[in-house]
Image (tube, rainbow, N blue to C red; front, side, top):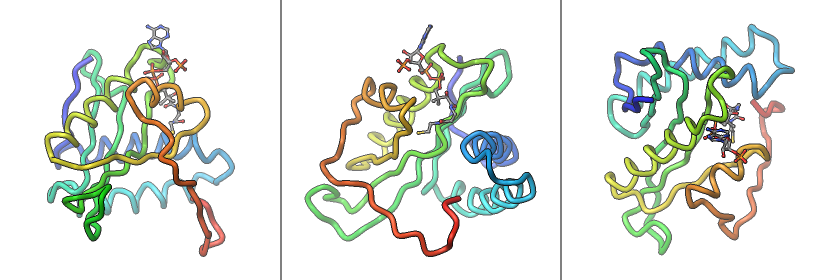
Length: 158
Ligand SMILES: CC(C)(COP(=O)(O)OP(=O)(O)OC[C@H]1O[C@@H](n2cnc3c(N)ncnc32)[C@H](O)[C@@H]1OP(=O)(O)O)[C@@H](O)C(=O)NCCC(=O)NCCS
């Protein structure tokens, strides 16, 4: 697999991979809602990818994009965990079904971690689904000691 960092030329491709990810992760949502979310995601990519505070890695096999993961970079007031005020969140870890269990997501997320080091990001957060937790643990992620908590204000978890 060849791993590369997405450019503005890949926005349609990462939107398509986002759509597939959302379909699989939110099977109860109807197709119109999923498409609307993917469209809004595309707007986000258009705004954020060129300025570098979102990074997407793409893994290609024989010229086909089969795996991806995104990192959203955020800036906060500095604290001991974020001495430069910069942190990253890993989202949309996804491998197309026919290509799973070959180490692709492990390799793509590892490439994102390397990019985060290069960008001097102090730490990375993610929310692990049960099936993906061991993948992240192998890369070095561990429970942060904080509990993930949420107050939903929109009535929708999507
Ligand atoms: C979860 C997901 C991202 C994993 O992608 P993947 O490319 O299959 O991931 P990997 O191949 O790197 O690792 C998956 C497993 O395959 C195993 N594996 C890797 N190479 C292998 C090989 N050559 N042969 C057999 N198994 C292998 C890994 O050890 C790992 O095992 P584990 O489940 O015990 O940890 C993928 O199933 C997916 O896209 N799911 C839908 C979206 C999703 O849930 N994303 C995660 C949100 S937190």
